[in-house]
Image: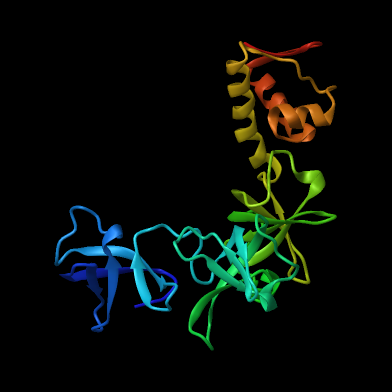
Length: 275
């Protein structure tokens, strides 16, 4: 029975306070009555999240946690006490972040990046805001151009730091952000460059020619939604292009070039028209 992750367990018996679930090794855990689905009966299998309640007892829940063991997340601080901060991770008992695992003073209402780990001394699930120490920095099992999952977690002078595939740290440069992205966003991205020091540059768009096709489709959809006209040309301000289409001006010019060659649009002085 694994703490901090989802387990598929079998219903062993019912009691006045809930149902006891068991694993294949003879362990059991209580699923409180308030979490029991109406159609659950003895002998059924059910997927539950296992953690410790406020009295340090192992407990099961069908609530969906916002983060699990050995994962990164971006969470809000619900309370601060004399021992640390408590973050909302979707469960009744908030996630504890001790002062020693805070890289700055946390206040109620703050949002912060956090990594969940199992404290070996207390055998409790704990959060750490010192996320940099949990990234894999040596074995980079990625390739340039690969599509990856991203969590945006930090602003820097260069751009946005992201968690890649819940394992690596990457950077999206500020001058390459052409869509609305905020801290805590989860999105798809692409590996742009893996440097000699294993630092990773990430892009929100596919690189090269592969980026033209989906953006051409986006322009066509915008045209259809705007009665076949957009007041954007290759002479438009780059910031206006980014605001309207969430892409760089360079990508826009490549995309309309392809659409023009396919005779799907016509380009006039005042904008582009759907043919």
